[in-house]
Image 1 (spheres, rainbow, N blue to C red):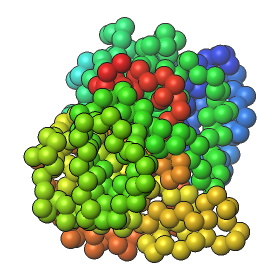
Image 2: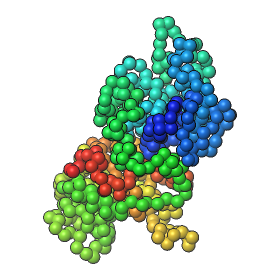
Image 3: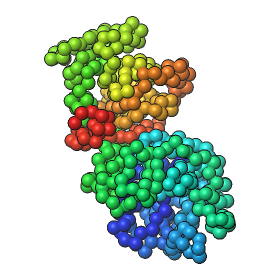
Image 4: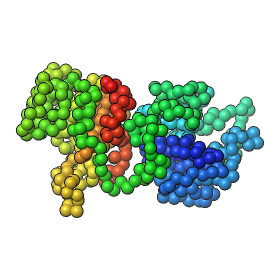
Length: 497
């Protein structure tokens, strides 16, 4: 769905713009929230930000621009309370954003105020997946829907347009009701945990899914959930400005690159931090990945080509020269090395084979297991074809013979059918890593729907545009920054420090 995300604004200084709306913009751009355009609707601020790449357009001018981030500025200020009507500036700005979405051909509008943030993956997943109706969250402090975070889908555009076309006074009732009680929501999500913590607390709970009314001028650790690039490093500790963030959001996606650590170096980091007791690898081949892991290991490959010592000081190594299907048909890894802590799936480059390997691995995993999928982030559509073919002479000699196959299809499959999983992407050359946690060895959804999933996704094509969307579909982490400062990453996955 073509999605417009917007917030309202009023700032009296450029410092306020940079600290409050700059922080909000960075958080939005580097989240996994799926948006096609970000709009800031300004209520007559006397000072406007000087952010390169972000145009400031008079709100009175009709039409839309091609910019992915834009500020629409009203000359006059309506403010928070005029003629006993609360928040007329917010009311006008909200109406303007909805009309902008309708004229721009958008299918969905997400409203997140600059003092509100989505914290958890499940909150972001809800905002990405909601596709019908007018949704809000629940504000426990005031016992009413939360107006600072909303989703309005195309089927409710007319209702929204009618609501905001009326003067604010037309909505007032006796006794007085707040605007939150008048908005015609069709759905209120009460399962997501959050509140207007900024009104009542000096810190944000670590179990929160969202927060509203945050104190924008607070110390940096107040924003513990926020990251410059997804690594969960506090945003105020980075050196990047708003312009850098926006240029990244608007970057040319026609050329893809993985500029992080080699995937084997990242696996060595995992082995050191996680200290796994057991490791299962599908697709050992020459043993490049096997050589960096030190615990008890099961290796599966139909044609081993190992020509050096990859056992080293490892106590137990089990080699099964067969296909992964044959291995799982004949063996239960738990009877060999126990529940598996860490897995690396790099077998046949066909998506149905990787999907089967993931299903089989999860059955022998536990709640703290991690599994890595290789080759799911191709650099171009040629190497993502199902059949192996070298690139043309015009392609870089570095990548011309890369082949990932169509295992990229596993990512949208897991996003659709297993939203309970936590999935992050890593920029590890040559073709990326996918790290999956929160596994459930009791889950049968993929297994029971396997045939229908394969049949449906076999026809899914990967154009260059969809390749960019694939890369942006999940949190993308910097492997170098994780290894340089692993504290928050490791604590998130409950590794030792």
